[in-house]
Amino acid sequence: MSSAHSTSQSTSTTTTTGPNEAPPPARSRRSSARDLAQIAVFAALIAALGLPGALSIGGTAVPITFQTLGVMLAGAILGARKGTLSVLLLIVLVAAGLPLLSGGRGGLGVFIGPSVGYLIGWLLGAAVIGWATARLLPRYPIAPALAWTALGGIVAIYLVGVPVFAAITGTPLGVAIAGSAFFLPGDVLKVVVTVLVAKGVHRAWPGLIEPKSWPWASRSSAAAAPTAGSTPSDSSPSTEPADTTTSDRSA
Image (tube, rainbow, N blue to C red):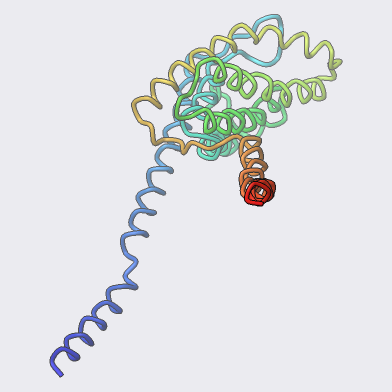
């Protein structure tokens, strides 16, 4: 009777403590707070990189700033989701009227100006760089990182910014593309700085971005699985000639 009573007590204790799910929500709250802090910090970094001002070269209406460097760093250090959210937070604050863009620009008037396409392109650039960085980790090789950062930080941003600039200003698209060449030397330098900084950061804090596999790598591994599974069935018919040879020798 005493053993049965103690068993029932232990069972009741297990059932009462089992549903206690306090630690996981606490971890998720800490993770959410950390993510929000990182997003806010990089939004502030992008804004701070606009403090030196803007430089206009060649008469273009789109200024050259350091803020694109912050966009690249956000994607390369925080990843696609948090990097894009940090850029989105900055854009929302600019729309609210805060003068966070280079030259103290802010307010809704920015979104009808010729540089609005580049602001939208920042979102795409951070997403592309973050997506690729997650798949380059944990090794983060320099050459592929340079290529993918250039694809996101230059090509993706220009892909949105140049056509919108041409549409707003009435400039022929070919002329607008040729005019964007003024940005290339500075943007290439920003790509190099981003990759060098990101490599050092991911080496010191390896958990900032969860490494992921390339989509085509997962498809190739899935295609290889049936081949590996079919090996036993393929080898089973080969035993039949061996059995026939043995029976002939015994005869």
